[in-house]
Length: 129
Image (cartoon, rainbow, N blue to C red; front, side):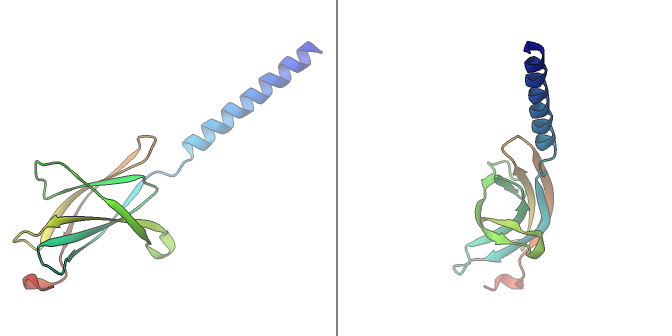
């Protein structure tokens, strides 16, 4: 009787360990899409940069490879149609350029990351708002 009980417990523990490892390895990896928007604000002093990502908890963005700190983006909605991603945004001061070089990092809680470099340009030329 004791042997049957011991084998039963060992089998349950093995099943639990296998299912935990399968679910951890099968988790969706973070995705940052190479699609972004840069829209000037009404004041014309700042530009709102929107980034699209999926399966991430946080997004940090470095603009124009400046040596300063990264900007931590805020989630503000969902989008992407059938892809069902989340939208993230930051506000940065406008420069003389109409295009911005972005270094984007999307992170999950378990330490997995998605790193993307992307150039985004304002849709309005000549500083129009």
